Picture 1: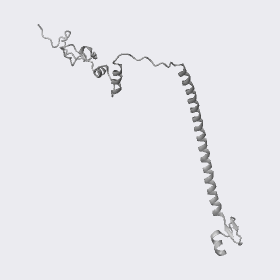
Picture 2: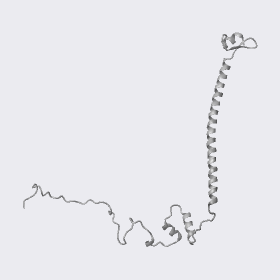
Picture 3: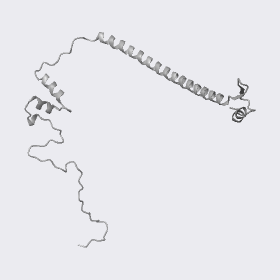
Length: 170
């Protein structure tokens, strides 16, 4: 490249020109701009890493505190377990007890006493089946559908005896 071409490309009188080994001027402004960009990026990365370190320190403190609480809980539970009886509670000795447990374990939803009796094969007698009082009926009597509802009574208009209008003499 000729000296004139270098002057045109780099600007001859610019202060950011350095003298090359061959005596020519070299424009270092693009290099300095590139260094500025890299410094800014490195500074932003360092700031982000410091922020991450602060967040990680906070999380570490929280995790260590949780671990300390779990250790205290373990000590408390093992201390209480030493005081508890190691003897299993007595289960009922009734022969239907395992069958009742099996009925509850096989149930897919709530199990009423009536359902448990059916599962155990016990006869359900009407006198033994409990009903809600609202649904109970006296034998031979049907339930009144209007029972409990307020009925409006038809009232006949009462004649006004104080006025003479509309009354015929006897």
